[in-house]
Image (cartoon, rainbow, N blue to C red; front, side):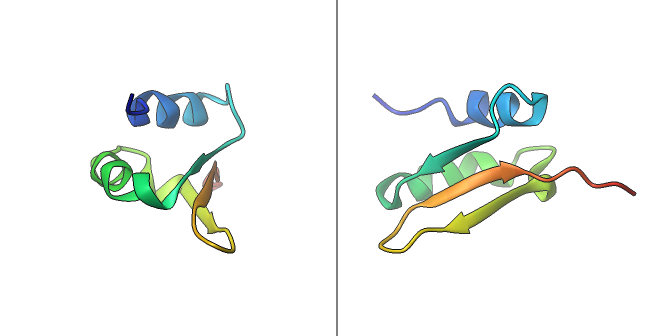
Length: 62
């Protein structure tokens, strides 16, 4: 079953979760959703050793 990436991004933006992880095999499917996400510039990913990325939300204080 594929993750609901839109829901994960919405929960991250709302502050319901602080981070989530995307494995290497999921990345291309996730990227399609991320590129169309309204707040994508505030979603920051940190690559893990061996693959995978942990995403968190960075509020822009401007």
